[in-house]
Image (cartoon, rainbow, N blue to C red; front, top):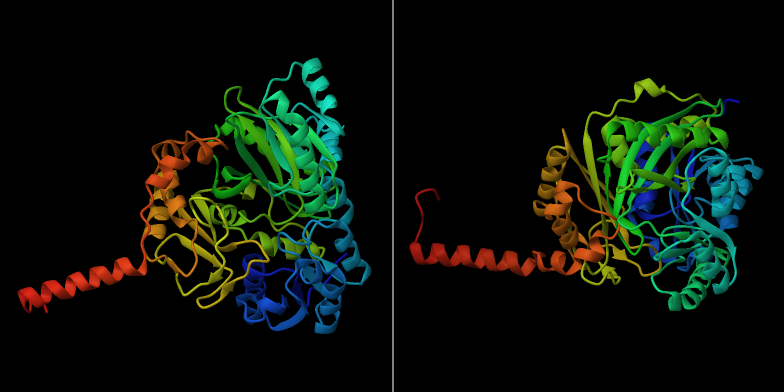
Length: 484
């Protein structure tokens, strides 16, 4: 059924809110921003056509307050809601509330969100769809269960205990020794309960030296499912991505197999809108295993847009209006290589948060650079929310070219003062010989952190002042030069 989106409320803040608003501006669709008290002067608030205060700082009374968000949509004249990523983006109950309020939900159906939000059920469906899954055990309540499973199935350490609900690296604990099992189980269940309100966990064999590969999917209401090829999301810290690239370095036959497998699974579950199927790839055996389905727009979708020339958010709007996909599978022909780094307000040595006011912010310019800002100079990075404030993307004709552009972007015009960021670490990573050669796994940062830190070349305003002082001193000593 055809529907018309007249105005979109973006149920998010910062980078994801700004990203959605960019496409809405392109399509001449007005937007509504929602904001908490500390975000009253935030960038996304000024980008929108309408802005509505929805609560105080804690997310539970603001960005997780479904009733206030729907009320804001209705009173602002918005007839559609896009959740971005994070907060309520994968909350099936919220999606249903939006639909019940007579609004257009820009995302997959509540039924599919609920189905894929349960890792145990998602894994069962993957198995029934002939998608390889990691050896594991579900419905875990005791350390004895885990020990028995490992003995019976001849599973060797390490293993990983994971929250059944949620994602983003929360509620995940690696176990390397038998004596760690009991405490790790308690920790994982506690984190799962705190983060997702559900302490159910499952246990899986931990794939050593694995690589994280995900396939971008778009689908409409007419069972048309198209994959936009894969992304490499292996570089992680604390199970959270900080560098992504598209495509991956997989051989073409394997690339086709993993992409077709992902599309088959999404067609089987009746998926609509944009979503991602995540896999763990084991280079030693050239095998891949299903991890989960992300029923939302991914942070790293921008690099897929760079290599395909498509606007994934625009496709989501089309699907939400009941239109068929504007593309067929044969139309999708990647012809570039792209990298994305996440600029988080964190100490690059310890990953501890670095909240405060951004006193200086200058973003990179030049060919093949794409910047997505969630904040502006003079704005505070509050301690209540995710520390991501900028996505920096670079593209090139091939991987080496894209790496050169990213190096230029990180070392050229980029200036961030007032908070610490991951920029020095990101630069060390993209210059590391093993990363350059493609020899890395999800353990790369953990294994090489001291070496990466030793390569930091942090540049501050004091460094620039010293260079200016040196220049002035030279002119004073030597006198006016011929070129002056």
